[in-house]
Length: 396
Image (tube, rainbow, N blue to C red; front, side, top):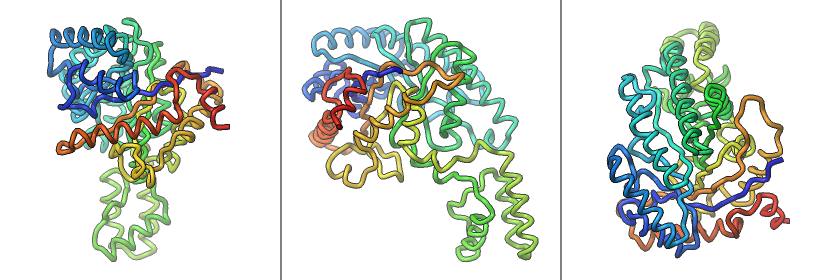
């Protein structure tokens, strides 16, 4: 059984527009006792914005600063710029090609240049696609093909663990546990090159909104509608199901029950729009897929939003994410039998603090909440590169 090495890292998006040169953020991190960093495209290393020549200069700056500080760029990661687009699933093929070949691959080249891994998220399914099962299937297939090409490209330039981030709503796959396994199998099967997930400890906050209704819950929706006059936050999936519901509420009770069955049949044509209860459980994700997640983004959360809170005493008081349960869940994932079609389990995991800073937030407050978060996690990862089994022994 693989006994993965565990590292503590920080995503430098927290320093965006403040500490922007490699020497600056590496010096800050080394002073905090962190020696592994995830370099975010949002912090002045985005190939689309900066261009090839700048990116090559940036890579040289990284190598020089790394020698001076001992801080290593473990991974490069996409940022909000490409996250905000349809990207790899854009309806215009020229845009898809541009994102694939002129953004992701150049970022991978820079990652290989500095000896780092890579992760990204830059696709989404528009509502038009979601409302058409055949088009959804075609779009999904095209995405898998493109991810497979990226996986093979990364393998050929020496990147061992490229991957895509797990999300939490139907229009951004993978967003369910089973959907994530399918994506990994599809990409690995098509490319024969390892491709992985990035799990995020706050990305289980949306799935509970998109559970498949049954007759009982639909009756509750009817009662709510009759009291409030609208379907506020009631999830039926496709627009066609809502259209049927709007017809149903004006029918006598016996006819309404029959129409509920019709609605459920319509819903079943759109399985990709619904999650299971377990998809909203961070620890279930870690138990099932942690071994296929070379990067785990750490954020504190109350479970109601993905707001990238720090691990301060105040945030931890109401939070759900804690060191020992996270590490035990990861260990459980390595104890599960290998599943046919999935890539090899990871040998290393970078637990990466992904904490956001506000536009008007003071630098001193940013440093404080980041240092508090680092101090919290250093209780559980006192030394980078420790085997997971050795870490767990410290809890006994």
